[in-house]
Length: 236
Image (cartoon, rainbow, N blue to C red; front, side, top):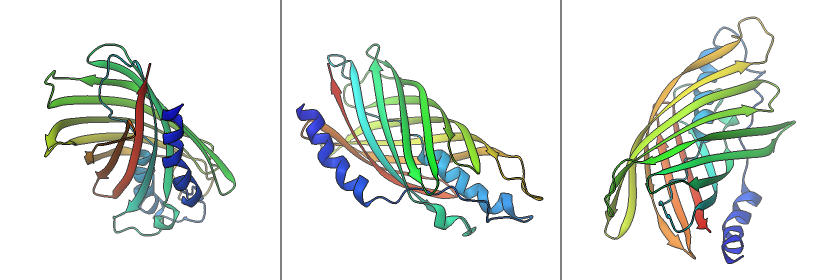
């Protein structure tokens, strides 16, 4: 119960003050639709997936966490930048062995007239066994539904290296997000699908507060900057 109480202390202020991402893109039309909307799609695709890189703790098989990500458009196409905002996520994992865990996350929130629903599932693998520093790989398959204008599927792969910097755990990694969006707008010049791949660099640090791993993080791609925070912990 202490774990749940402490987690709520972190969650409630974020939930009250957050402004979620919007998905109303039907006003963006014309021949430049793809160029103007694709940076937004890339940002959402990366922001909607959280890998929850907590430590492997074999004495506690279940992990639970919440996350908040905020997307910022850093591309030259500003038309969809006003749609960007926060994206919440709830995640969990089952530790199978010293180096393998099954993991996933989901989200549901109201955005204008839409109820956005997304989920992701996959695996996490600790590649090396060094107690101080190690390589980790995480692969998640995600799907987003609910908005009247767009649906989105993606595969997000992240490999990172964890090490200690002045007694502070730090994670540096690279990621690849392959996405395919289905555009539900029937208008001349609007494509049925937009798909592609976005590479990003991930940076994170981990603090232990009240037995909760607090992880401020950043994902940097050529089109988007994702800043966020994860709160996670392990239970028996």
